[in-house]
Length: 280
Length: 332
Image (cartoon, rainbow over all chains, first blue to last red):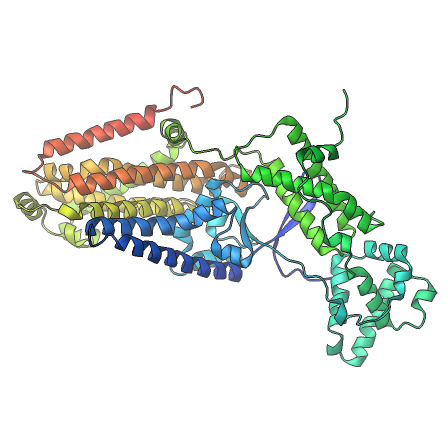
């Protein structure tokens, strides 16, 4: 129902479980690089100033150290931070990005080093034009260094809770009297369908009256067929009001879902969670 | 099917939390080995979380729980299904005596190819200077190399001042960082399927061949040998090793006759490529020191036979190291 406009790395485990990691696009990666560039420049200036302190006493040593500091800072910044911060630099951390293995496996140091060393080619001829072009053309938004090192840059997505106040401001939801039917509705609706219904309600004022009536008529017909509620719950409801009830049912927050029940179990406690191995 | 979502989350959260704790422990210490009961527990918790995720897929409107569980399963998957060796603590002695030389030998076909490309360049450069000495300004676009060799030799041998003096450490640092960057570039050009690497080494060869031929034709063979051998004996092989890394990478990307997916091929050579580049960089640190503190001194301060002998010993030692080190080890 929805066109997929953002890339993701889809992984199917041998156990048959599928999960996907949303990928960072070229623009977001460019922003992260700009931040990192500013950070490297600051580090070089700061260390250069420190080295300059010994310049009056040991001018040659100071000049030598300046060269080495510049080299180490520019070459080591990405490698060390991505290794110690598990795939993140300052820029990536600020924008919620992270380097990850393109098979979803553990990131190795050789991969991090390789993707950073290959910046020498990606940066050509200026401002990462080569890497940027590769990133735009690549299915997984990989620059050449990522391609050669088998890495991708993923982004953290904080899924916001739906703002139901704009959908159902203070209205009673007659579906609440039927929790088992509500459960069935939630079970039968896909995330895309739910998102589409929510978007339609959020933007309802933008539609022409006729289009609005027709749209919610089609939506309601679909949902009525998908998970029927008894007549007492739907009596005198317009199609739009019916959809408000549906969306409120689908996106209503549940307290238990928001808060994890237990964190940081002791090893003895966690051991109790595992059933004993089968006897031979 | 999940009928009561609240109960489902309440029942499963302790398992998710336990998995999260175990994963954090594993991720903090990459070298840690888990005991068999811990491995079983980790696997059980992973399978349970995976199963929960599958059940949640049919219950789509809890994005936060789903996102949390997906992240957890992704982390557990990375820990459990990773078959490559864990990153262990650095062992410099083992790396120098075993890892680097054995990696070099394992990839010797790539090294042979870069040597061939460089030699082709050397012959081309030498032939160009021999055939048309006027082409020197084109072939050698560097001011300090474009003059008359005999005049330079006379100037260097007649100098009474220190040619580098107090500038030697700075000069050395510049040489090291520049040459390491060139070597990294030679490796990085491997992404052009090795073509860029070979072109770069061919051009380096042209310059080297032209310089040597220019000095030899001018009758300054001893000078050019004494000048280039002490640092070149290590510097040139180091750049060739960088090129070797580039070709290893290029071959993995090209994958001729190998039906393995490109990402797996590249993954398989990543360690070797990095090992070769680090080895080359270490050689270049040595070469930078020798070039700044030794190569720039000529007769009568430093007789050429000493410099040539020193360079020859370096070549011999390097050859023995690369061909013999780590051979006795049964893992080599």
